[in-house]
Amino acid sequence: MSHHHPERINALLARAGVAAAGRVSWFGEIDSTNTWLMRQPEVHARVCLAEWQSAGRGRRGRSWRAPRSSAVLLSIGWNLGGANAAGLSLVSGLAVVAALRRAGIHSVGLKWPNDVMVRSGKMESKLGGVLTELSGTRCVVGVGINVKMPASDCAAPGRADLQSLGYAADRDQLAADLIIAHCRHLQRFCRLGLAPFVDEWNRLHVHRDRAVSVRLPRELLHGIARGIDRHGALTIDQDGGRRRIISGQASVRAREQVSQTT
Image 1 (tube, rainbow, N blue to C red):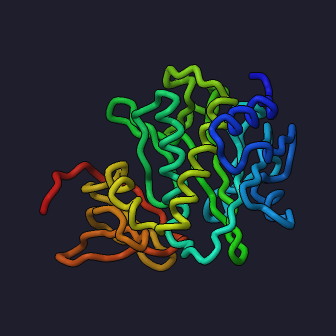
Image 2 (cartoon, helix red, strand yellow; image 1 turned 120 degrees about the vertical axis):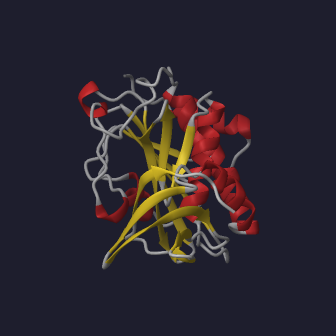
């Protein structure tokens, strides 16, 4: 797959009139797009886009690796001002869904707190994810979306790419759409907080009203996932009560489909 064309991406951003227009830095190789942006003295509306990362990072300290030019790998910086950062990764997930829908990909959902999932028949596979990092009022949002992975990579259970799902994605256009959607979602988030996004996120929640297991550092919970609350916590119905999950170290897995109850 050919490399990105940053001039074209910047032109698409300028056409959309977003703050990141003309502020895309492209690298053939880099340690991490998030790390590069965090090192910059000023990050607002700056974008780091790369073909390959030697030290890409995911949630809970895991590495994020993708073969060269097989994915869209980018990070966008933003100054939150006085906004509360709670729920930032959830809003980023919604921005990713908006960009994928613009590309004609509608069978996508979100797994708390930061996975982008795709539905194919009865199966749900991970298409990508987000990683948010904060430093004072500055945030960096990293996004990785699998576009055309080697067959051996997508043979792993629970992983998918756009090509294997039958989508011929234009990586430049998808990168531009991801940046545009993040600019718009982050602007709204800074003005209004998480509240306006909660209902939409819950509609896209792949585990909503399903039996799940939640692994915490010192506890394993079983219950029915109900979605996020206005603070971004995952709510679980368990033994007649409701539990809020806020730990960044929580791992959530579906157990079985259940009927919605009131």
